[in-house]
Image 1: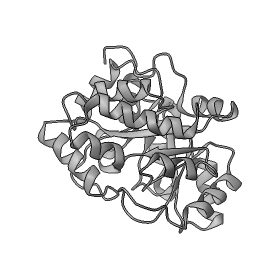
Image 2: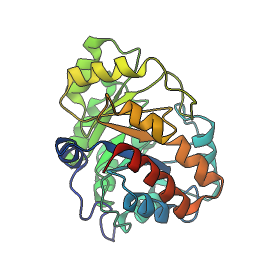
Image 3: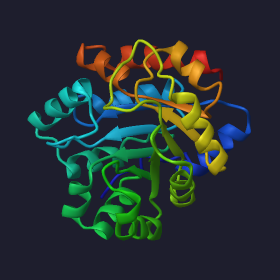
Length: 266
């Protein structure tokens, strides 16, 4: 695909996040649904400039099992606008964000495209990471091997229910960063952090030297700062997506991400 890679000026996902963590920074990874608004790429550019260390970009899918109502609404809006994987990657290829991008998708889209073809398309678009939450560790190798060969870093998740032995196996296979699910359930804003968040982050950190970023339910700058007392970083999705659905646009997205960045420190 033609265009400047989306990660121009940035390193790979893991190397970038490791360098920031090792320099003493707390990591911020906002999530935006691709295609949800006409100006979604401008939103990505705005949140990158506002202090994101990496950006998680959702690929809209018709049966998003992990997505709560806000992200589902954004995905539906994207699909109704005619958004496809090809259109998303084509736009990302010219985005020139300056920070790494990881797509969040479901395995049906990966399988339909073909493992090697999908991995190659991500790299061609400048995408350096992928999160495929419905692909279990035991069934990962066909995609994981193709991703490794192409240079795509597959981020894996550990949940509050994941036993320590399995956390260790997931951590050994993860790339990019280790995603600590802060609470059981689908994505969505929460008024309070769950009691599960501390223990799952601690198990993840004990099992891996990868950066550990917590997500699912982190909704405010205060919550992001609190979770980063234990975690290396925070993934913030529904709270940002809701603002975009309400018409915040790039300026409003940048304002919110700037508030998150300020709470976490430079």
